[in-house]
Image (cartoon, rainbow, N blue to C red):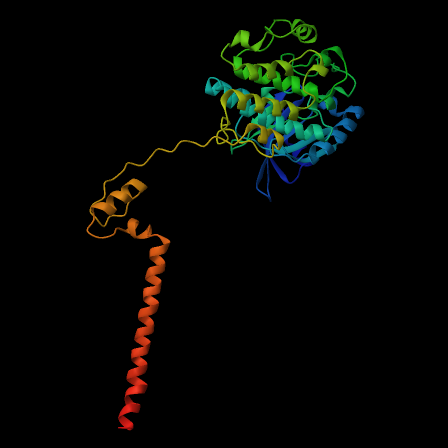
Length: 388
């Protein structure tokens, strides 16, 4: 697939058009840079054969308006959309941190708390979209990208709907909307889609992060995989990785229920249940928030409890150089106070309130006596000499 930089540039004259960042059945993504704002962006273009279809263009415009209105830290923001001269473009934030798939591959897998934290962030973003009536329809690791700051964001909301329409699961090229490994049963059956559809995809992603394999053995034929998703039960998570805590495994498997009514009704409720299960299994402070930022997550964040605080290496204790040394801790302060020839800084600072009051009263009495003597010397003495 080649890109026509001149065509894209003519539609987006304020941008310099860069290289291809990715491609797929939805078209391709190129990099761009707004010349005046110096903002780096990703520009997604739908395939030309779809862009010339009036029905696709109408869906694109309708979906793009909704997507551009989504404002959440874990959703990729849409800056602009253009439908003109047979071309459909979405201008989005450029996320240079790579996909969740590439991160997992580079790291050789995630520890369980890290895997759950990533899923909670994605659940937060999906939940925000669900509250606006937007379904993703194609949740998978390739559609979860990292910003330079380490924040994970969900992208490609509504693309499946734009390409295939609201009432079909098959494109004009015969491809099923949604990736077979993560597709929900109701998508395969052509049933009613709901937020529980995205819950299924996210639960599949988390299962894979925890176990290193997918819930269904992967067949060479996509049709066989689709049949399994539609009509069979997935392999229980603890059968694959027995050391996963029971509460966590139970939540994941409920998210993978074949019938939508048996799953969590929304991504947010799925995220809350995940957070509660992990707090039950690992205790408060399990969430590695410095590794995986969890932002604007509301009930999900509350259910996870306080974030873990990294352990700081204690500084070595240095013995005081002499009696006047200032102690760095309570025990040291007591030692210095006892060894010194006079009260140390720590001991003086620990004087009780009664002693302070005595000192103040003494100072006031001394001041009064001094004033009285001055009055006697200045006033009384000259008066007595004058009358003698």
